[in-house]
Length: 586
Image (cartoon, rainbow, N blue to C red; front, side):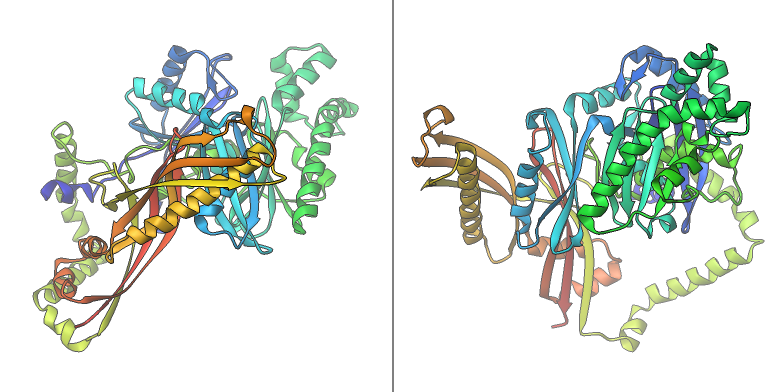
C-alpha cells in the first residue's frame, strides 16, 4: 500500500524521440494544467549512413550517437528509460476508408480490413495494422487505417531493448507531427507540409486528425545537390546559400531562386493534384498551409508554396508554452514539432495509431526493490519543501481543503443527510483482454469459442468473392450462437477476436463458377461479467463510496467499444470499453 502511494507522486518521463536520416531530436514534456512545457530537449546531427528511410543500417554507431544526444539534454539531463518513436510515412500504408454507416461494428472492422487489401501491396502476414474510427461524414463511417512492416517495427524494438530502454510505442510521422501542433490551429482544414532531408510528407488534416497523406521524394537534399551541381560549389556552401538566399530574387539576380524553383515546382504540382483530389472527393476546402522540418527554414519557401497552392500561410504554432522557456529562436521550433507530438502522445496516453503494443497499458513506473532508493529521495525532497510551502497562501488553501476533506471523511453521514440521492451513475474505461493482468483498468475476458459449419452456393461470384461472403455468413452465425450461450450476467463484445479456418472446400484450384463452397471454422469472442464490472468500478472510488453503493442494485449497464488493436499475428489483443453503470438505491 505504501509503495502504491509513493507511485502517485512520480510518473515515468517518456522521451519523444524523432530519428530521421540525418538528425535526431529528443524532448521530454511536462504538463502544467492545460499548458505543455519543455522539461528537457536536445538535437544531434547523425552521421550519414546510420539510418536510411527509417531503417537501422549501423546499430552500434546509432547507439553511440543516441547516448551523445541524451547527454546533451538541457536545461535538465535526460534519463533514457522509455521512448516513444515515429517511423516515416514512406514505410507505412495509410488511408482514410469510407464505409456504409449501416454496418455493425464487427462488420465495419472486417470491411475495413478487406478494403485495405485494395491499396496495400504487401501480404497481411508481414504487416502490423491498426486503425482509428473517425466521426460519420456524409452518411459514411470513416476509418483511418494504417499498416507498417512487422520487420521494421520489431527491429526498432530489439534495438532499444539492447540499450535497456523501453519502447512505449511507435506511430507514423504525420500523426505525431500533427499532435505537436497546437489544437487551436486544427479548427480549419489545413495542409501540413514536413520537408525533411530525403523526403517530404504532405498531410491534410482537421480537428479529427489526419484525413489523407502522401510522400513526395523531393526534399532538402535535392535542393542542396542542385545548387552544388549548378554552381560547382561544395555541399556546405550550397546548404548555406539555400538557407540564407533561398527564394529571394533580389540576390545574385535570382540565380539561387531559379535553381530552387526547378526542384520545388514538381513538388508544388504534386501538392496541387493532392489537394484537388481531396477537395473534389469531399467537397471541403483546404484553407491553411503549415510548414515544418529543417528545410522549412529556407528563406521565402513558405511564400512560394502559399502562392502556388493558393493557401493561407500559417505559423506552425506548437503545443509548447514558451512564456517561461524558449528555444534558441522561434524557427528552431519547426525542427521539434514531431518530437513534441511524440512526447505529448506518450504523456496523454491517447495513442490511436500505435504499431508497437506492449502489455503495459499505463506509463506509470512501479516501485520495486531495485529502485526504492529513488522514491525515498523523492519523499525526502517533499518533506524538505514543507517550510517553503508554509509561506505560501496556496499552501494554506490546501491545508484548509485537507481539513474540510478530513471532516467529510469523519462524518460522511453529513453528506448523506443533506444530499440524498436515489440513483448514482458511474463511468469508467476498461481494458478487456486475457493477458494484461494487474493493470489498474484491466478486466479478464471470458473466452467464448464457437465452431460453425456453413455451406452455400454463390452464382456469378469469383472464388475470392464467394469465400469472403461465406466467411461473413460464418461470422454472423458464430456471433448469434455466442449470444445464445451467454448467461444473464454476461456482456458479449460483438467483434471477432480470432478466426480459425479449419477447412475450406474446394480450394481455388478446384473451384468452378456456380459450384458450392463449405467452410468449417472456429471463432473466438470475448465477454465480461457485469457483476465484476460493478465491483471493478467501485474499487476505483473511495472506501466510503464503495461501502455506500455496494448494496445498491444495478439499474442499467451500457458498454461502448472505444478502440481495439491488432497484434503482429493479426489477432485482436485487447478491447477498450467505456462502461456506464447506473445503480439504484434499494
